Image (cartoon, rainbow, N blue to C red):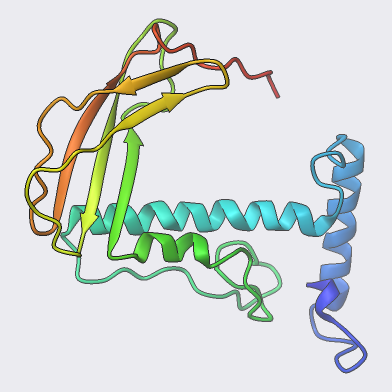
Length: 189
C-alpha cells in the first residue's frame, strides 16, 4: 500500500499507519532470516495473496462440486486500515494476487483432485478423489490416467470404479499407497 502513493497522490489517511506496518514487516523478515525466501516486501505479500486466492479457488471448486448452492459470495475489499487481510483487493482496490487463480475454478470443465487426508502415517494409504466439473456435456465412457510423481518415483493410479460422467459431474476415487510411493521428507520449519 505504501508503494501506491506517488507524486499525484502523496498522502492519505492510512499512509502513516501503513508505513509503520511495512517497517514491522521488514524487521520481521530480517530478524527471522526470511529474506532469502522473500527478498522484498512485495514478494511476501504476493505469496500471501496467492494463498488467499488459492483458498478461494478451492472454495469455488467445492461449492460447484457440491452443486447445492445458487451462488457464492467471496470477501471483497478492505475498508479500514486496521482490517486489511481478508479481501481480494486492498484499500486502494489493488488485487492481492493473480485473479487467474480463482478464474481457473470457474471454467466450464475443471478436473479437481483432493486427497482425503493431508497427513498420512508412514506406510499408510490414502484415497485421492478426482472430480470433474462438467458443464461441457461430456458423457459416456471416459479414460482418465493419473500418475503420482516425486523426483525419483512414479506410480500410476487406478480408478476404483469405471469413469462414466453424468451431465453435471463425475467422481472417481484412486488409491495412493505411500508404502510403494515414498513421500518426500521435508525439513522442519
